[in-house]
Amino acid sequence: MPVPFTVSAEVADALAANRPVVALESTIISHGLPRPRNHEAAIEFETILRDAGVTPATIAILDGVPQIGLDAEGVRRIAEEELAKASVRDIPIIAATGASAATTVAATSHLAALAGVRVFATGGLGGVHRGASDTFDESADLSTLAVTPITVVSAGVKSVLDIAATLERLETLSVPVVGYGTRIFPSFWLRESAFTLDWSVDTAAEVAAIMRSQDQLGHGQGIVVANPIPLEQQWDPTEHDRVLTEALALADEAGVTGKAVTPFLLLKIVELSGGRSLEVNLDLARNNVRVAGEIATAWCALNA
Ligand code: PSU
Ligand code: MN
Image (cartoon, rainbow, N blue to C red; front, side, top):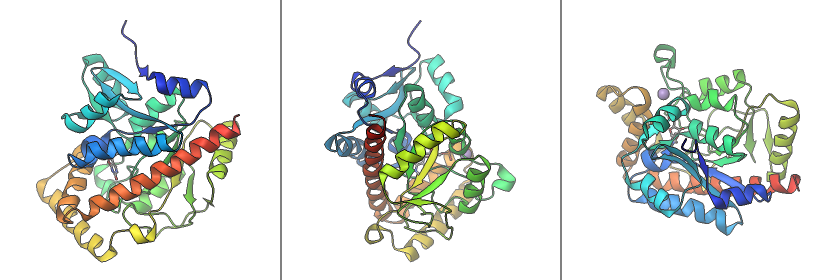
């Protein structure tokens, strides 16, 4: 019997010694960022963590084996190969057929939790799509966080989604959403959205305390830490609104549906913004990786 999944020696050692580990997803690399910047970004996210004394666990399925922690060749493959996009339901199929795939927030969370990794950094969370009352298009990121004990640091969700509906669904699914230094839910490239949060924290130690308390009192769900991009790094809101309207219209015209919607919009927006959205995307992702590293470190300190 082949092993069902592998945990890299580096990640396994860190977990066993209560040293901080942060999971990183591969769909943002394979389908969310254009080449070759995606490869540079994947390496940079890992380097930011290592420099902070945190072990990165980039997650993907390679040749049928879910891998928690990739080597340099694995990181190259997720950036350069044409990989499938796997959510949780796809994992067993990709594994059984020996195929390779990048993992979404949902699939990365699921695999990270299987390995005992508790903190995960991404760019933006998937959510409820606009028009979902007709299409039922809601990311499995949300339902997975309802049953997976992982703390996900994101810059909220993109305004290509229905943010209000996404927050409602997180409430229904009993997934706590905590603003990091803010009571306003961020909208990815922009520091703010029109929606306020009930809770905010100012430090990584507070997040770690909530994680512990949730372990004791919750039902095994995750936590969404909403970490806004610094104001001076955000995208110009007028330009943002113009490009978004255009990208949504193009997706509509092209008749894109299902799991192709998110990657289509992401890459169109980079094109239509002349690359500006990409720089903002990278800035917010770096920022999330840093905060996730601090939370993982605080989590280990709490468990020392
Ligand atoms: N949002 C982003 N960038 C991304 C994604 C979402 O700002 O790259 C990716 C993540 O991997 C997320 C997935 O889990 O898209 C959601 O896709 P879907 O809507 O098909 O569930
Ligand atoms: Mn979908």
